[in-house]
Image 1 (cartoon, rainbow, N blue to C red):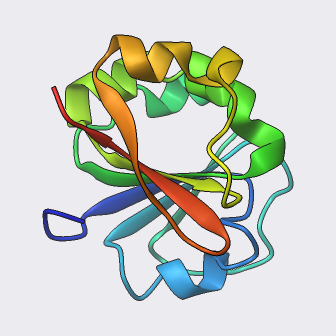
Image 2 (cartoon, rainbow, N blue to C red; image 1 turned 180 degrees about the vertical axis):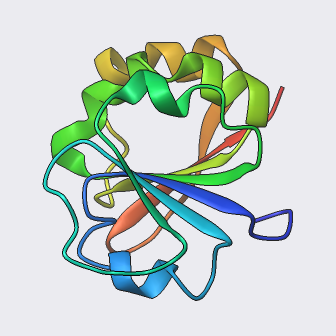
Length: 122
């Protein structure tokens, strides 16, 4: 990450590491899916993707592989806050899921064992 951790938006479970995020980020917004069983002051559950679009302090977005379709819906969040995006899986997701990312200037910049990273480059 290129800036200090502020807020994180999670679509899914952060690949099973949701609990690890509470001590790193000021606020963790979990959107859709199962309601987390954690009770933390910095955890906010959102049922609707649209409720995350105006979050301006988002420094990172986590997207589980089964939720990659959400990338087409969060363009406003990505253009306003310009967060880094961490997507589950080593292999970069197919172009059909990433057209919106490319259009707004994001590129896959790093691959790890369990995830890959997208950053705003333009």
